[in-house]
Length: 438
Image: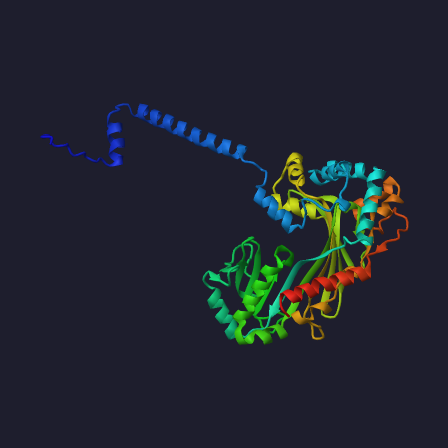
């Protein structure tokens, strides 16, 4: 054992270091100069780190984001061999989709429209859809309202208030309002149900105005994001939460929106458009949040008794790039890298929207088969039409998407196969109702 005692270390407050340092310098100007020099070095180091971080930050989205965006836009990595296209044809389309300015985009479009072989192959491919077995429908979005009492709505709100496990698959958590307005404006509370695939079902509870078209609980989701097993489990568990109000909730339910679409894989979107039957609105290609003077697609709105049908044609590749980059700018090489993992496509949708009126006809979940469906009545312009036009006329039609544009001859559209679409619609709806056990 040491006979010497360790000296106790005296702790000196930080500001005394500065005081003694200052006292040791009789020349105050010298002190300030040294402090300024050391601060300058420190600031320069911080600026260098910031500069290197910003310049080395990759603008390429993560693989997780690419996969999620591809799924949301219903784009595939591979398709059937009967729907595949030449590598050179995909390169032509990729050059167009990846273009970041109107000059480059129009030049890429001209290259495509001048390629007779490309247009012939596209015409052949779209007729494979129309005449074959490839014309498949999918649910893009559905919004359902269930008629539960105010007391049941309060009970469910309290139940879902904390992280709630609906069943072995689904977890429910509260959705708080933010600047994006995630809480539905006509409801008091909103929640999200998540499963293992991380996609969400939005649940809104407690309508602010029960006399409106809304019911006390609102469910919004995209069925094609989930497996049949997941959807079945969700609604079975949800109906169990309704308790003795289950039968009334379903009987008096309402479908306020139902979107059904067709994904035409490997069809170049600028070679297809729909013939408007109602009020039409064209929309443009965009890059970095800025619109280009080049039509991408159109909305065709028709009114019915208490509802409207919105038929839409657009390019899901554009949505895909937007989801990846939002309003940020990207290079052609970055876009091409993201496009290399997808099959390009054209999408046509029919969107049913319920609109409340004194004479409005509403449809419950049990009456889903009767919901108006617009796709069988759509007439379209196909690549076959472009084969009959001059290059100048092709450019007019492809850039405007309007077959009534000045400078175009009389164009005969074709009708989508009505019987086939109705049969496919019944198959889709019957399958969904079976999942819900209705």
